[in-house]
Length: 301
Ligand SMILES: [Zn+2]
Image (tube, rainbow, N blue to C red; front, side, top):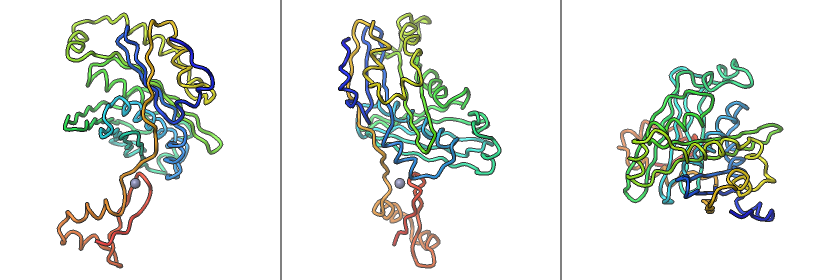
């Protein structure tokens, strides 16, 4: 692998970087959210612990979404609780478009202090990850308990339990002074079709993966977040001793939502008039909420 020149720092700005290490059956993704994260957070007015949580979730959605090949495919993360301060966290990714929101109890959150653990936030929680693959290739979902320290750990558990794919995920979030930065890396042992999957089950030791996991696991939070360090340079630092590392530009990441007056008109037109009648306000409009955008749409329907 050759080192890229420092002028290429901007190459992956706002994009995911995809890499593969063929000799180790490994693939990876790195993303650093900048403008998209600012825009998503700006649509909400969340306290610091919720901002932190959502930023991590968005990084994870971008990393997992970038594993999908078709632009029409979507990944959705939904974290739910039975008795936590956070009722629901949702974020999704489709063709580079990210969005997310958190529904939580303000007073219960305030009792938890500045730096609540994942358990404090969610209590006994669950994380559902859904891949909707475009072009009729189906939908698959896995649900894992929200255990461990971070959402990233729950996502690792998802890949291991639901897909039998050993996966290492690191996320880094820094907030302060009204600015939030978030980045992450996902590296996984790539099952090469069905054959690879069988081999994975049959063998307990994966020396080439263990080697990669040690290298990848050495990435530092500061490296992921350092905007002066290109994503290529991170790959170089971690894997420059590997025979071959292939790098590809992934999708540009943007904030995106499907809400629009037209969309809601279309949805409402499918309800029976009886139901619409009940939904109308005094002015005869139906007010629809987009939780992702914290925006209300008064619809004439
Ligand atoms: Zn919206």
